[in-house]
Structures are given as C-alpha cells and as structure tokens.
Amino acid sequence: MAIEKNNALAVTLFSEILTVDQLARNRLSRVLPKGMEISHFSVLNHLAFSGEERSPAQLAKSFHVTRGAMTNTLNRLEWAGYVHIRPDWDDARRKMVAISPAGKRARDLALEAITPMIQEVVSALGDEKVRAALPTLRELRLRLEENQ
Image (cartoon, rainbow, N blue to C red):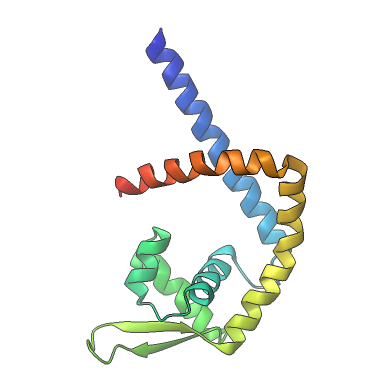
C-alpha cells in the first residue's frame, strides 16, 4: 500500500510539472516577439548572462538537447543576425558562439515582453510560496541532472 501511495505521489508530481511546463511554454510563446521561439530566447539569454563565448557542444549540454537540435537553433539565430559563430582558433574542428549587439537587443525586447506575464503569475502566487517552492524544484532539477 505504501508503494502505491509513493507511486501515485510521484506520478502526480511529474504530471503537475509537465503540465506547468506546457502551460508556461504556451504563454511565453504568445508574448515573445514575432518569430522568436523559446529556444532562441533561452540561448540568447544564456549568452547575454554569461558574457562569454560558448561552443555549440557546451550550449547543447547546458540546455540538455542534442548537438543537432542546438545546431539548428544556432543556425536560425545566426541567420537572424543574433549570434556570431566563428572557428575556434585553438581547435579548427570546433566553433565558438557569441551574442551579437542585435542579439542583445532582441533578448532585451523579449525580456521586456515576457516580464509582465511572469510578474503577474508570481504576484498571484505570492513571494512566500515562490520562495518556498524554489529549493524543492532546484533539488529535483539537480537529481534529474545527475542521471543525464
């Protein structure tokens, strides 16, 4: 009986997480600037925040996606002029990616577009509930990353 309760609890937890993920992605997609996808914003935000170049493989690892998926995202960002991709001077087989000034502007516009929606949700929940949820969500993420 205890195992069944634990299974039900685990299934309920993951069901809620997956539903929240889908709903959040839908809402974010609706408010992002035209033509920008969540993956584009995420990569631009990562590069802007880090302030350093990254290889496509490093980015793929950071976002837990395949190299092919990251290459597709980077090709679209490069086509839009949002990133610069150059050869790695130390290893000609690799490339390095940096955010461009246009990419910084696009990221800033996207952040301006999504911030009111995010603030609305957090305000509705209340700061205390959000602060209380963060340690559990962070620990769950870390445990899932261990098994990658």
